[in-house]
Length: 331
Image: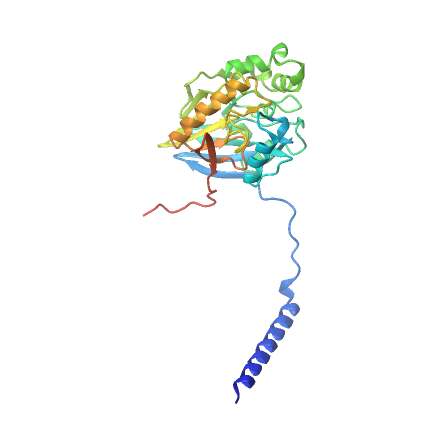
């Protein structure tokens, strides 16, 4: 038999098999059309820090809009370059609201509480109570509400609209300078009246259960306050230590993983003292990068956990891989 005939026969055989296979697939009742669900997976992420059990939940994304209105001191060309170099849109900055819940040394602490029902930054915020429920976390079991500061998107979930405590057994931890500033209408001023209203609604009913944290105070076992003022007068970050492992919850030390990192002296429109805020940012980021301490950033892309490294005159944020199951110990 000639080779050309063999090749033709083989092609015919393969074509015939393909037709039979295709017909079989088309006829198979098990390959009905799949309808993809519209919803996302639950908005929580669990991890361990030393002996501590931790979960990140979300209050939902917060849209700031055009970055030129919030990040000050960068030319449009420079801002667009930073964003496009990092595959981020140039017309709308969307921040996350990553809320840490950690059980450490017998106490459960929740860090910052989101927007509550105030929709000042769009309808996607206000998800905290929903995501806590999805994560199986009972608000009544929270012992401590640890606030980095008293801005509208950090203290808004303490009280319900009915005037009830969402976390009935929790003590509140915050710097006194921030409490005093944001609950005083004359210091806040008319431009940020909604921030004042939020602080009054959520903080003043809890004055009898507020503990004012001091700089370098270990106010809960394993949790230490570190002042980083400027974004607000009492803005504070928190160092968490358990069984030799550390994590720094940096609150609003930096709102964006690029625009306030590559050139960290860039100013942010919502800072009470932009110059002081920039200096606090450089000081704290330098320390965290030099000591290779992982961070959890309130506004970075979900779940906001990663590491910092020096990058030119600024810093680079390297997101940590999410660990979705327990890994065996290295041999």
